[in-house]
Length: 76
Image 1 (cartoon, helix red, strand yellow):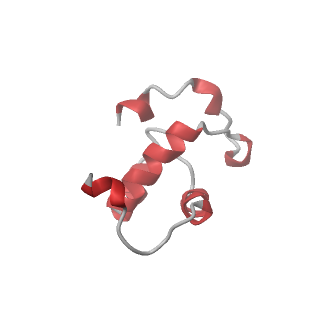
Image 2 (cartoon, rainbow, N blue to C red):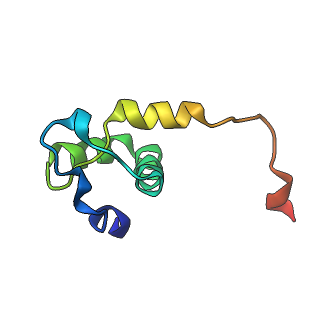
Image 3 (cartoon, rainbow, N blue to C red):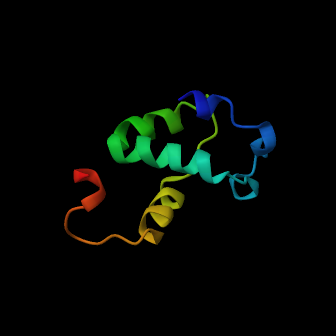
């Protein structure tokens, strides 16, 4: 949440299509969205902080290559 509040004010455009998001900010938002989509939706609707749209987050999530199975690094 702190990362969200400390995001530089380059996203002050009133037009949502004019906003640019850093990768770190989008990843933080994506983590929140994956944990609780309803909480993210409520935060976005509150208009207290400008957040990327749900479609942007889904686009980022779908761009990640995911494979089934276990990650061996977790067990080491």
